[in-house]
Image 1 (cartoon, rainbow, N blue to C red):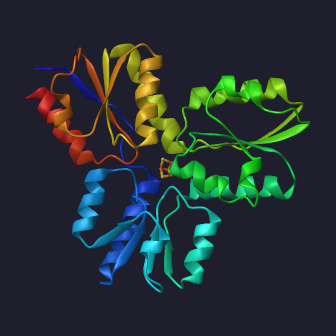
Image 2: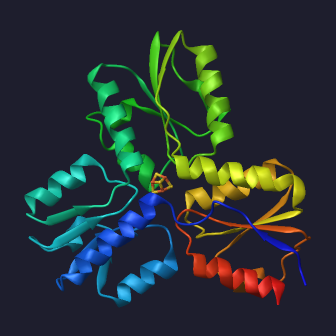
Length: 277
Ligand code: F3S
């Protein structure tokens, strides 16, 4: 039997549980519920909500005026909220409070005319939502790695924000490089507690495990960051959406098994049973 250890903490974070319960409450009222983008990056859960009647859409054009509309945990640009108000939608905003804190931070920086550097993944829903809090998002700079700091323009002062699910070590390296480049760097902690704890737990498991398996959706940023953290520690690491993904993998024992913040524990248990049967 393969030796598999469950890594703790793993799986659903506060923000995901909150978003799922808010969507459940909206559906319980028996009205059509439109959800702009996936509520969280978990295809199985999204399909389960679809069966319960949730209508997932990618654009407000697909939402009728006056409808009940749910915004995902990743947050949305302020222009989306404004348009939803014009359409007189009844909005339920599940944006995680940790993401909202970053929204407030970048808005404050813009009001103070401070150039903004956002450490995050370009094109990710959270990054787009954060930039979308600004009146002039095109003036902010998104940085994904240390090398990109070199191409930033000079300034006396910058303000830095970080995507909640970014790789904590990489963010730290980028921040240090920014601190060397700019005389004054205003910084607010961006990586959320859940992300930091899950990444640290994987780091702690790496010395004693040959392979790290991360249960999560391929679209999930925090799932891919957990794989990255294990690979940085020199471990084999694989992202698993369902137990079927285990087929053909070159897994070496002992295995550390974890899960992204949007991954369900029943999939973790199914993977565990599959490995240890
Ligand atoms: Fe919120 Fe962090 Fe989870 S930002 S949704 S607590 S991963």
